[in-house]
Image (cartoon, rainbow, N blue to C red):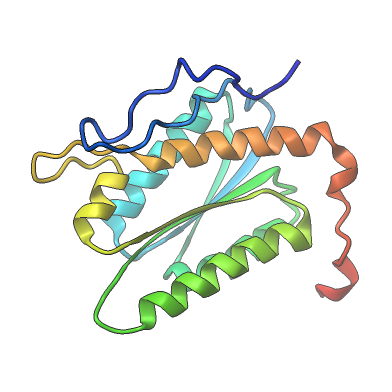
Length: 191
């Protein structure tokens, strides 16, 4: 029996009339017995906390109760924290990195986005643990608020944190289904 939802009938439309794409099917995976770490940034707290609340609520809805939340200063620090959790004694089944970058007037946005994206991918590869990319990269604060499920200027948003929570549970189950993938092939280089 597959732990993935195969029905797209359960999917709703995202954004409530904003003309956005249809959401993927809602997860039917069981999160019972899973250990998940959530790393969140302190920057843009209204947005990030909304995303984390959605993520945690979705994991709990799926049965995950062992959730470790760690705070870091900003998105750049997400990678170090995810790496630290991945090799910790917590023996996590998945990690969700949550942050929000909003473009400013300088190139800082592009550099941080690229470094965080590559770093999170690298943690997954080095430790054979699902690390969910929950970092919004938005051009405006309004875009970020809507993606955190915070209605603004008469527009209804969708909390992407719920999608990341479901993804963490599904990927943790995939990891458990294929336990041989748990061997860290680069472990000797990570000390």
